[in-house]
Image (cartoon, rainbow, N blue to C red; front, side):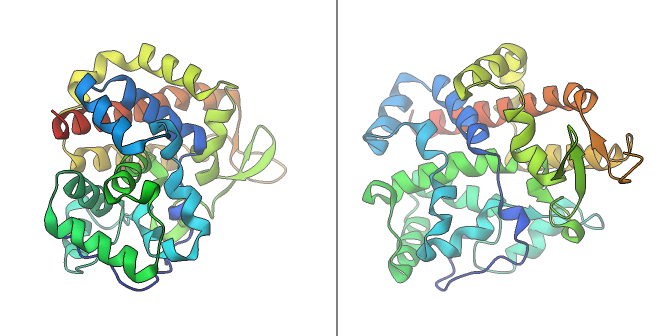
Length: 285
């Protein structure tokens, strides 16, 4: 496991895959996570976050993207796994580089900080100091917690485990209820927002629908989270042209697409929330 953080500004090669679940997607993951924490874990989380809620800080890693000192963290929100590579090959190749390169390694680093690993903590502090980045609540651990909950959401978004050739689906134009969008964007935001629910309502619906999977999901390793996103990603690509608009020639998604894939989005959000809670419950037991 590596904890060396790059000490210069990093510009991501693939802009798109640094995008994320929309704001409500991350809030839904955080809400499910918090609701499934033990009382001891809730106490520790509340103490770290002070006047903030976990649901609120789940979007902090996206909020700080506009701050130049945090530019080094941009590649931590995604990972690229090409069609001709396995997950294991991608992880092995990335491990040759000592810096944090992707969301998989970002999750491992944030977990290490929350588990009081001195090497991970010192490395994160060094890069923050080098770039004069402002920490959440002035705290390494509060910042690591916000990054962790955010990255767990990101890695469960299938287009975040993207293909290099189309920048995680952002180069693929589609029609979504007759509006021109891109494939990445509708999975990040549009399909969730289409339901017209608050994040608390949506999280309640998710838990009602997927609670039976909780025990199965919360013990899965991070590799399994990524593999699930790869498999769903391939299903998305394989059904991309099932419906094509005759005028534009673009894939056209509406009620049928929402019907078919919304339950899968609910599973990804639920799995992310339950898995995040299991990790925090283990750390703060």
